[in-house]
Image: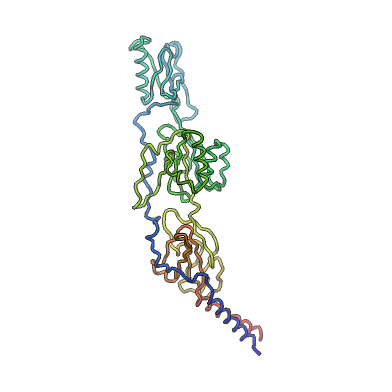
Length: 427
């Protein structure tokens, strides 16, 4: 009759043979040292562009244009001699007080004054505009030279209404799109995920209506949760049908190629590698006009996954530098002390508690050329040989498992412990 010690020993040996013969689903694997980094674009080689390129060069003096509001006082024509010129104090302290009566510059760049035809002031400074008004009244003999009293000030500078949609913010949902025009709200939703992000409707002053000021007013440069580019959607389309077709194509990933080459779309990269072509971005491209949409897209799809003896989960890949398989395991909470010879648990979070022989086989499942390719990494060798450390790519699935000899060793040790406990109990 077989005693209990022999029975448990045979049971452990049968389990070892069974598990060792089929402990892994990956029979044909590619060695990690055969997968070089030359196949993939390095993130660490990319450098941020000079952010000054996102800012327009302001002129030495303010140049007038449509939607500016001037303060004009013309003694005896626009204001009586008996009364002092009116003074307008702005609601905020950003601008100095303006003197005169409000005169807006119309869409064609002209203003309308008493007794004069329309005067074109587009592109003039305040001093030049004042001189042009004076000469017009003197030439028509309405005012006499050296006896005129004309004051021209800037009462309210023009602004540009811009919509900034950012998916790199940690706030959930885009609920504040309810205050945005329906077509713009739909466009913001179609451009990316709506699970997080915010939209900002801002007014930028003249010569500050550029990408840098738009980003600064809405939280700064895109963070690590965003892609390394800014997309500008120009506000104008030739007709509503073209706009609707464009918005519908944005909801279909297969149709976004047409979106990339659209004449009303400008893509500005924020980081460039040594082999990347210099972006053909001019100052005209970074200047924003009324109705434009600035879009900062989320990069939530750039993640890797873990399984096996690792705690299953989804982890983001850093945007600005590369990570290898050892660093990726460390990001998941792995403890490498046992992989280098110590006898404690490999995972700080559990799942391999009390293992004498730690797992050293890592399988990185990667999609290449439409197929799932398993790449095998020896964790012990990877700790001392950089050539063994596979660079992690978006979509990789990292599986940690025992090698057959490690599994057999742990089972044998467990069976010895079990036999000892049974022996102690039988006494």
